[in-house]
Structures are given as C-alpha cells and as structure tokens.
Image (cartoon, rainbow, N blue to C red; front, top):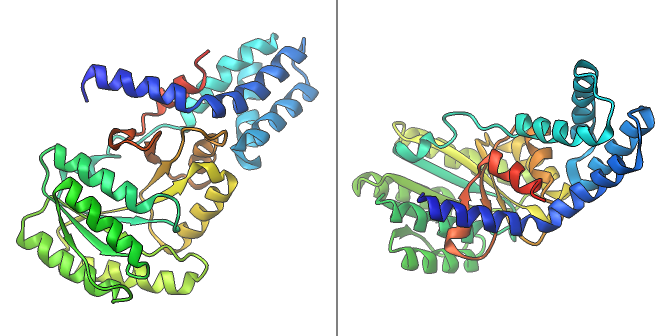
Length: 309
C-alpha cells in the first residue's frame, strides 16, 4: 500500500473509531481523573469501565490483572499514568503472527463463514476486487445456496471485479458448487478460490455437516491448496459477535476474523475481546462502504487510532 493511501486509511480509521474511542476512553478517563491514588476501588472502577466498553468480563479481568503487576513493578502512584499501561497492554493483546497473511502468496482456498446480515457477501466482493487489483487470478464460489439473493449479489460482485464465479440454482447442493469451483480453479490456474458459505447458525448440526462436507471435498480434490477460514462478524453487535465467534469456533477451524462496520459503532472494543477470549486474530477490518474500506488489520494502528486525542 502506498504511504499516502496508508495515511488516508489511518485517518479514516481514527474517524471511524470515534464512537468506540469515546466509549472506551470516555469511561477510562473518567476513572483516571476521579482518583488521586491507585487502590482496589480504582481497579474495580477501571474494570467496570472496560466491561462497559464491550471488552467483556474475561478480557477486563486479564487487563486489570496485568496492569496491577506493572503498577507494582514500576512503582506507579499516579492514576493518570495507567493510561499508557493500558495502551501497552492492548498492543500486547492484539499482536498478529508473522504468517497471518501468508495465504495471499500461496495457492489458497478461502472459506468465508458468518451469519446472514453481517456483510459476508459484500466482504467477499471487496476481497475479490482487492486481489484482482493485485494481479491475482480469483475464482468465486456461490455456495450459500439457501439464499437466492446471496447468489445474485455475489454474481453482481464478480461482474464488478471481473472475476470468474461458479454458481448454481437456489437450494442446490453447496458441496457440488464447491466441487465445481475447485475443478474450475485448478483448470484456470487460479491463485485464490473464495467460497461463500451458508450462515444458518441456529441449526449448528446442519452447518457442521455442510462445512464438514465442503472441507472434505477441498481436502480430497485440492490437497495442495492452503486453506484459510475467515469468520465475518458485524462489530455493531458487540458481545453478540463474540457469542457468534464462540459458536462458529465449535464447528469450524477458524484462522482469522473479518470485522465489518467498525465505523459508526461504539462497540469496537469487541476486537480485543475476541482476541483475548478466543485467541482468534482479526485479519481484516471494514470502516466504510467503499471498496478500499476493507483493509488488513494493523494492531498498532488500531490501538493508536483508539488512543488518538
């Protein structure tokens, strides 16, 4: 990404995280300025402020526990200095592995999972545009066959991105679509095969069977491909998104999270809760409707934007 584009996205991130920043730092600053010394009451209030900011209880407890140790080690007496400790703690929590995006440089099958309504199909369209612009050959598979609208929407995106799509009729077998798509991806020497999948979490047994079948087909027919499983979550749903992630983790081997709609929500703290509680890395974030508004997740930029005064 060019330096100007990167700066432009950081500005967009700072702006998009305004409500989240107000939600997190508003409560934190209130606690910091309301105490003249650091005691148990201070930690309790700070913990509550983090829980209210969608960090969740588990994450808030972990952060407070780590901060207590650092306060002791560094002999910190001034509550205002705890803000820097909080920032450092979040940086540590949100780290990404060195190979987080290695799938982009390999022949890969990317399974996109998530409940309906989180922006799954739009996200796939944006990924297709992104990789096509990078000169990669992309094939899409419309395997969310239970919603005719999803097939139509993905077909529209394939036209916009000028990439191939393998689609069938509504209610056709998703496994058959993936089988055909794998065959097409191999024949056309595609770099990336991106598969949309059904988002019916209320019937976990069906979803598990379906994902299991799709995985078997990929493993059998395309064993040389790297497999990436990305879960799309709508950040505006806060703790609900965390529950979805927990449930999907039970039925799928998730390798990363795509967090959409970060702009305009006060619940962006959920990114931190997902990383802490489920040990799942956020890999992409969306801060707007535009094609370029889906970007790699940069933990450092995210935390910097959160603490930007």
